[in-house]
Length: 494
Image 1 (cartoon, rainbow, N blue to C red):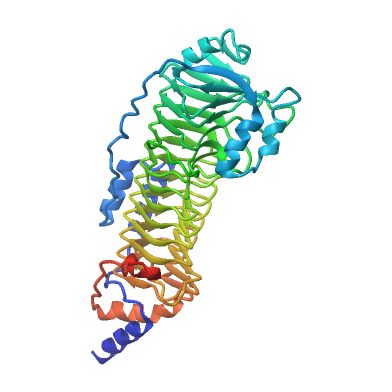
Image 2: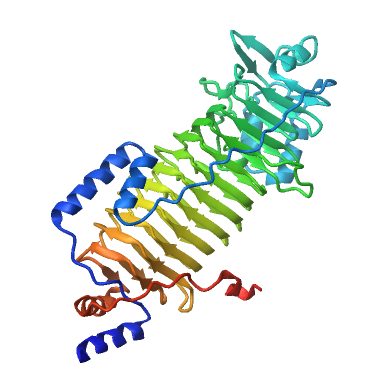
């Protein structure tokens, strides 16, 4: 009894509550779980299979809100006018939103011709109506039909008093050799339909590819749409499909992308946007971050299927984004981090996601605060399951962290008083359970480590091993803290 009390006192002094006593998992049970997880990864993270694995581990896969976005309600309005304007007018408006990065490449892509842009203003039109409006105008040679496809061989700007609608049967091709793209400052609405960049390269700027951007007070709504072969350069605004609302005047209505397909699109980006909803899309072959939220607020990323990708990461929440929910997404086969939250982003919930077979880390937090990570399945990644660095107000609970090549949890570069709780998780077959590198004093409690033995603690957390083994022999249960300290108490918040 004295030895047991001594062990518990040592653990309390180290600041790390210990898990419940349990027997080590048998080799056969571990093999069965690993086979199921491998089958899950091969299928891209089937929600049903992921849910059954979580249930068998005594956990639950958190379910996203399944409500679809509100109907866009696009209404046609006559009076549209088409004219040709100098591209410098358009670039000035883009620079107000996002700076001038990659503008020279965009101008070079226009070639030696007059740098003309098709400007639509004063009306809300269908794609067929746009073609009819172009007839007899200066733009008639640049808005043409090829079979059942409309081809734009010049950039199209939709002004703030205009809109363009694509229906289910509409096909819009943006001609890459002629430097075509869409810049929307009004309303771009896709109810089905497709936007595709053409295959041939641009002779003046080989790296250029068409893109679809919405900026200023503009909004984009897309349901059951298809986007293919879009995006170039390093700036998110030209990266593929983007919504950039960083000016003084905010949009009157939110943007959303739902039940759509994005293939070989560099990134789907929302910059400075409030209330974005990205739901139930299939995204593959992204060369950058598949879904990027930067300086965004009160947005939802839910039930998307992301991957595989030879270059990019899955979801990134960055640059001080606030009030974001990432739920029910399936990420598999990504070249970089599955979910990244960084650069002073806060008030983020990560729940019910399945992250498998990535080449690096499953979930990574850096300079983030007030983040809840719960009910996720993170398995078979080549890096750590979850990495926390320079964070505070972090709750990581009730996740399955399985067979990752790195540690289940890596805690590094933490302040000594940073509030981090790692509680109620199931860890099996990771390179180590908990690894620290200047980890501060995280709360580690109530985790199921039966399948993680004997590689439980490593690095700057290895000193917890003796106390943990003694507590297993003693069998004294340790309660799991309900939450980490409230975020309202952090950083002087009220």
